[in-house]
Image (cartoon, rainbow, N blue to C red):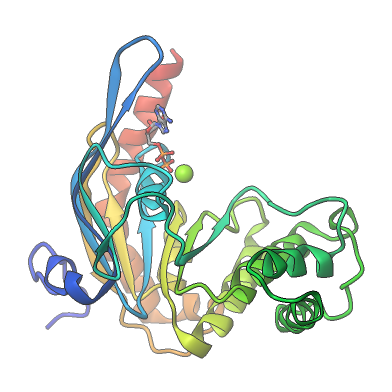
Length: 286
Ligand code: ADP
Ligand code: MG
């Protein structure tokens, strides 16, 4: 076998594993109804499974429907047709087994880092002392042990992301849904955050769906990189297993020849869609 196989040629990853998948989409399509009565067919019928313990990155041009699919798995968007299963059960309503990390920050500005993490645990029913202790421990794990009493405005963008990561992981969800979580950060900080995420994920390997438009980030983190076409009626046009050894350094791995080769092969597929995506965005503006 070659290092890179396309799942549409070698159907190893998606539908066959869906029974024991952490999350699976079966022929899920999404049409948005617009205020003027028209509709937009964002995503064509799509089938995708994320196995237990698997780190899947979903990559595609901006506006293709990545967030839409992630939001289906989160239970925030209902499919127009098709089904979403979470650990084999049909999802209806919010996916309570998932922890989310989005691009936008969800920290309360009037609470310290410690209180921001602890409050989420109290909401889950943990007594205050235990919540505070667990929050302290998780802030330590994300490298913020010395910043517990800082308010969000007293932290850098990267540090605020660390608090967000601690918030999510402290709650110990069964799966992680991340939508361009490190998007607003500079490239270096993003790589450092990716490395931190991998280090923490390595401990218990939850299933992850990680949405990004950054192919390098996707390859450096994931077990599988799934490529979406530009919309409308976006679909999955590539599914690449990533054979880079773990544990991985999310930054240094980018220098390996195997990384460069993988990047080149996937970029062949993605490039055309990115160009289409830009052309559409420019048409829309004109
Ligand atoms: P991505 O995350 O890949 O950038 P999205 O999933 O956010 O893309 O959006 C996919 C497409 O669906 C875009 O064209 C977007 O404008 C459209 N869209 C997203 N959400 C809505 C909505 N609530 N109503 C109408 N159109 C939407
Ligand atoms: Mg998005």
